[in-house]
Amino acid sequence: MKTNLLGLDAAGLAGFFAELGEKPFRVRQVLRWVHQRRESDFTRMSDLAKGLRDKLAAQACVEAPRIVGDTLAEDGTRKWLLKVDGANAVEAVFIPEARRGTLCISSQAGCVLDCAFCSTGKQGFNRNLSTAEIIGQLWLASRLVESRISNVVMMGMGEPLLNLDNVIPALRLMLDDNAYGLSRRRVTVSTAGVIPGMDRLRDECPVALAVSLHAPTDALRDTLVPLNRRYPLRELLAACRRYLEKAPRDFITFEYVMLDGVNDGDVHARELAAIAREVRCKYNLIPFNPFPHSGFERSPDERIRRFASILQNAGVTVTTRKTRGDDIAAACGQLAGDVADRTRRSSRVVPVKEVHA
Figure 1 (cartoon, rainbow, N blue to C red):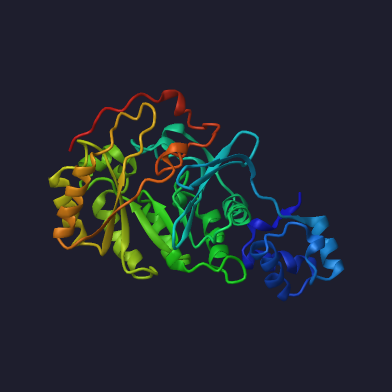
Figure 2: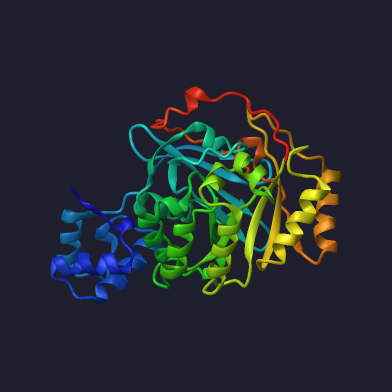
């Protein structure tokens, strides 16, 4: 089987070239051809010796996931459905804005965590994506969109910190000046709170971190984010403080989906303000994006504004995410792809009752 060069960061490519008997400087050349020029045809890599091009053609390839769906929203958001194998497809989303272009990519086919309000989680889980399948989403998007991709967020399908063996090499390629050259501040990994993964990411490849909080107490979070039963808030906040010791930003972003009558009361906002006194953070309020049989409703706009004002009056930085791409199911929490559900969860989904603290 040929080696897919999209799956090799600089260290991996160095090892590959050593086995071919090639000099280390070839790593820089090939990284630039593959990731900066998005070239997949070795014969066109003109500054490589012909002998090396022949070796690469015989033993390597540059293969991204296959696009099987390409949808454009009215607001310019673009969503791709990407086939990663015979049974699974994942989704990636590009969000253009005036001063930046953000690509949201997936790390798993489905998700094992089963958060109550997330369409991906209701679909079930099949497998981790490989490094080539993860970076392939960025490689493809870079070829297909005219505006520059300035930010990458790992907020698509899956829990990235349960797939770090593949996520970390992909992150290193995003940061490599010979590949995509993004700054650590412009690459964000989102987690529901997998504490061992947070500690490993901190030590091996710290980038900006977003934590899916969604509730200010263990009692409510246990219901909305079942992972909290294993890693409760006290332990999660301690892990956030450890992460900040090496983080490229001086704050953690806490993501908070606004669920009508569930987690959007004044008392919840005051409890979040207390958390902000424990961890340097900002809150990103996310209006809930409905999907069939979710059992939840989006908080009214006025309730979200009041919730935000309570936080702001307590001296907390807070933003409210503008909903993008919801007309093509590309908004936060809506990505579902096409997954061969190894957990068989999709056949067991029932409407979720409203949850109260």
